[in-house]
Length: 255
Image (cartoon, rainbow, N blue to C red; front, side):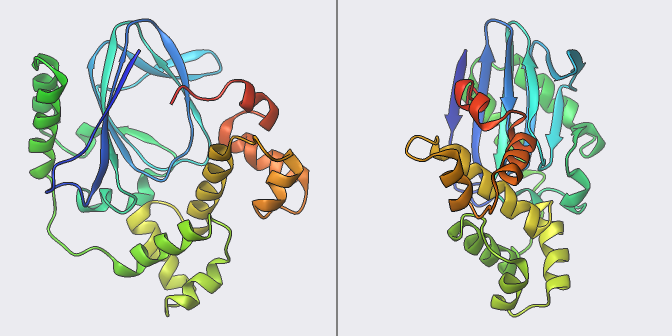
């Protein structure tokens, strides 16, 4: 297994967090947890599938995935290779005309959005190395960038949600931004792809998972994350990861 991270060029860094190259020599299954970024995936070798009830559902060569409420099992075929474009939290909106909530909890073929994507798919497959692939994908994405200013209210909301580790009330968040809750939620869903509450839940669970549970009991972890009872925490954790906290500690994701 080879996993590489590449930083975007200055022209694209306001919109893209990083690129990832994931290459598998042997067949491998990984659990992809919900994240706060929309992701484009370009498969330039082999086969990749979602694994549901032990059934493989092969993914198109190029896909775009919105934010999710729960993890997905991904089966990477033998000798497969993928290039992932991981957007900043408000970055994908600059490349997509449709409201991002239309991508919620789904992965769709990118040719539904960009009719010329087959050209770059072929170029990625023929490229001599991964550096060439990053250059190719950047050139392609620059042609898809829409001019416009970022939504400053949404950006300010993201900062506040991160600072609170997802533990905050959306009504109070909207009030702090001097906007009605209804108008705020509509703007947030359009730019980010989920409601502020759903986004906050992802941040909260990511914070819990990244802590590793090394210094606290599960009851302490739940309480510090804003839960008032263990069963509610266990239910949300299993929805997010697909496993109980105890089982997750034993077999965390590969990356």
